[in-house]
Length: 133
Picture 1 (cartoon, rainbow, N blue to C red):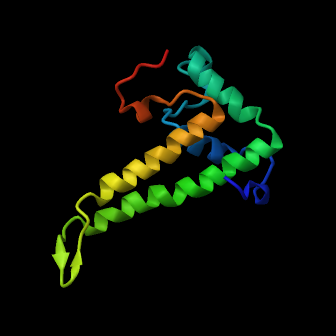
Picture 2 (cartoon, rainbow, N blue to C red):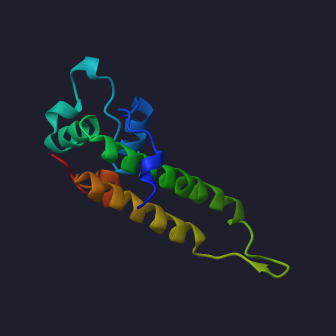
């Protein structure tokens, strides 16, 4: 994707890391001060955390470009629910597959983000059926 040079190359903020975890299908890690259940005990989760903390400046800009694409795709899925109660109004006809189509596009970009970061897709992108150890 071109145009990533316009995005910040500063280290990721905590909110951006949370969004990256969500979009890549990883669960919340909780507070690291608890000492239990943190990413340090799971190799895949730890790899993902390491990547987020060690991206090069150009990679940070690219990640932010991915985020800028994913936010509106996520919002569009939520917004599609406004049409679920109407199949047809005058000449307008609802796309019965709109939510599925939007989720497919959203998940495609989520998978591409995982590919760019070089991390396995998290459990949420596997439909919740995979166990990550």
